[in-house]
Structures are given as structure tokens and as C-alpha cells.
Image 1 (cartoon, rainbow, N blue to C red):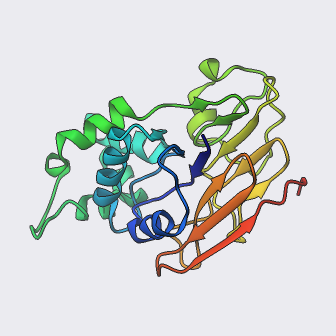
Image 2 (cartoon, rainbow, N blue to C red; image 1 turned 90 degrees about the vertical axis):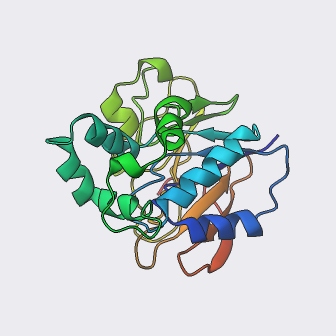
Length: 230
């Protein structure tokens, strides 16, 4: 069984569908999505619908990102947290639930979507060879003991130390300016700014280093990971 990781989607459903159409994904492949499914891009609702269906088929491990956390906090505390979420791209998420209506609120988001974000999405995932998180890790701590600011908020700019497990880290959260995934050998960041002009959505076969990318205009390209530190 292959593990294929997909970076921060951010409502870029067209890019996601291009990857799904172009990559030779087998029924036995496990897709690990690294969080930040919502905000900034135009089709967050469609992204969540697709993830729910894929998870129901038993071939998706969805992680939770900081934008899902902001979305949940905005629902719990609309007075304080809602304005911050809206300014961080939540306005685009709400618009994706409009269905021809005018103004929409969080009450227009289906309960199944809230359940997916709150209950189905995980904080991390671990295979025999790789660690999957949204943002970063403390190399000295097992995944179950990681502080939230590391898992969801810590940038990849200051490259993480090798993890005590000896496994390779795969993460998102920090958009790579050159549009290519960045590998430092023991850690790989595959957030390549899907929602940005000139950005790409990246999927990575973590065992081989083969990656595929699609953008908002449905352009597609592929490459191989540079496994040397950079």
C-alpha cells in the first residue's frame, strides 16, 4: 500500500480534482491529507464533500490544520474569534456554502462538515516509516506528546531536527516560495501555496519521492523530490 500525502488544499477544488484525475491512484493507496482544507480558495465546501466521501471509502487519513482550528474557534466564540477567521480566509469558506443565497453564516455549514472537522480529522498520523503532521514537530517528543503550537502553527523556516523515532517527517503549513516541495532529508514540506497566484497543490508518494502538482488553472506537472538538504 502506498501512502500519498497531499498538502494544504485551501479550497482549491479544481487543483485537487486535477491531481485525482492525473495521478495513477490505486484503490489500495492511502491518501494522507495534511490539513488546511478551507479558507482562501473558492470551493471549501466541495473539498470537504470530497474528503468525506474518500474517508467513507476507507482510503483517506485526514489531518487537521490551523485553519480548521480557527474555523472551530470562530464557531465557539463568534465575538472574539470570528473576525480573525474571516480575515484569514474564512470569508471565502462561508461564500462556498452560499448555494445562491445572499449572506451566509456558520449555521449554513452542514453538521456533517462540522463532524468531519471536529471528530474525523486527526492531529497526526504515523506509518512504519513516516510521520505526518500539519506544521512541524519537536524532534525529541513522540507524536502523542507534541504541543499544539508545534503541530499546527510552527513554521518550517527553521528546519526541524531529526525525529527521535528515526522516521521521516512530512508536513505542510509553510508555503514554499519556489512552488516545489522542500526536502531536508529527514523532513519534507509539501505546502506549495495552492491558493496563491503561481502556486501549486502538491501530492507526494512518500516512499519514492515522486510528486505531482496541479494549480488553480488545472495545469499539471510532475517531478522527483530532491532528497539532499537545502
